Image (tube, rainbow, N blue to C red; front, side, top):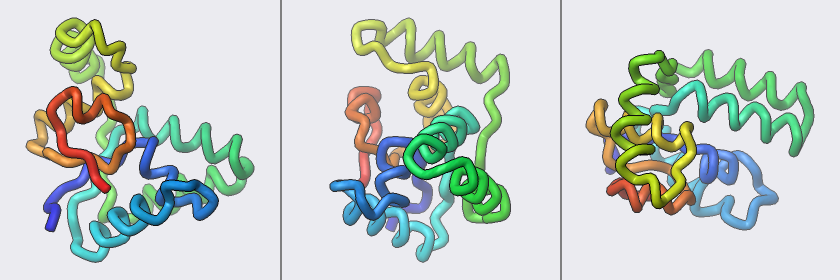
Length: 137
């Protein structure tokens, strides 16, 4: 059982979208983590990406419902990015791994995972593996 799982846009969106070709494994991991009362951790940068993509794929109403459900669900923790957290992410991940072209959102995700001791991400983005984290599903 996974005690904590970082939610990344790539697989989290697939878990919520039955039309996505990767939906089944992503949904299985997401749902089993919820059922096991795992800590589900993400950042407001990931939430912003999710909102944007849901607005494009569905509509603004669905995107707002996603936000309402997320913020009302105590099993999900959203880490709000501070200037200091962002700077630590830039220094640790963007400078050190410049050849991999990590996004700022990914770098902040990696830093949050590192600081919180979370080793696994619900992610399809190979950058999580490059950064040394396990990827689920």
